[in-house]
Structures are given as structure tokens and as C-alpha cells.
Length: 78
Image 1 (cartoon, rainbow, N blue to C red):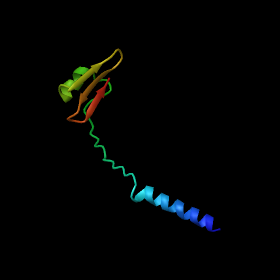
Image 2: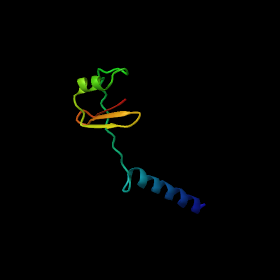
Image 3: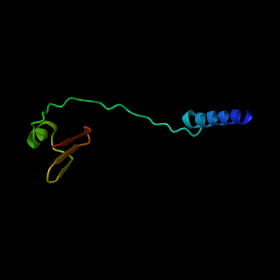
């Protein structure tokens, strides 16, 4: 009987240490701000550049084009 009580107490102690005690891992999340952009799914490269300006980074492959605007925290893929 005392072995069960010691086991339960040990589990409670371990859980309290990992969840909120000395060795707890804490993750902090910041909310993402959502802003509606005046773009539609039909808009292409010219419309995106006209609306957002020249991208800081462009990457193209056979199928997609990626435009990055880190100052606005926006990445466009089409």
C-alpha cells in the first residue's frame, strides 16, 4: 500500500516539475495580424508588384513564383 502512495506522489511531483515548475518548458505565441490585401486569385505578377511594390526576394521555378515582402510580413505565391 505504501508503495502505491509513493508511486502516486512521485508521479504528481514529476508532473508538477515538468508542467509549471523548475524544468517547465514554456512556449509563448504571438498573434498573427491579418490584413485583407486588395488582390484577387486572378491577379498576376504585375498586379502584385503594382499593389505591394518591388519584392525583396523573388524565386521562380517551373510551376510557381514566390515574392517576399518581409517588411510587410507577406509572401505571395502564384
